[in-house]
Image (tube, rainbow, N blue to C red; front, side, top):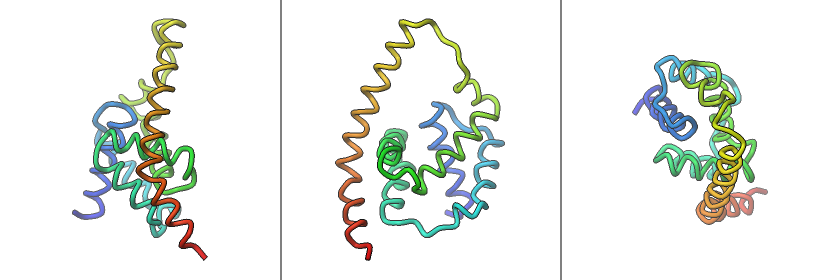
Length: 143
């Protein structure tokens, strides 16, 4: 798979995890073009490779990897990729609707918040078991 094809597949999986929908061609092209930025021209660490492998594999893997990286690898490659995709999805139709305010009311919002919090906690627990050992080995191997 070429670099462009790999980034296209990656954009599709991350977009499904973030928005619940397939990306538009415009979003994919902007995502691929965004990787020309120097912040993406790095050699991925062992943890980066593990997180990206999980994120590219399935929506559940992407959400699990994001849960781990959000708390324990905030400056890592996966987070940079997700921030890029988030910014693009937030500004390009039709994905921007996912991020707009509005909803059924306060009770539904509170229930949604609680449900999201519980799901995030479960995802992080599973992610810690999956990626924690890789992260620890990587830290121990640094001089």
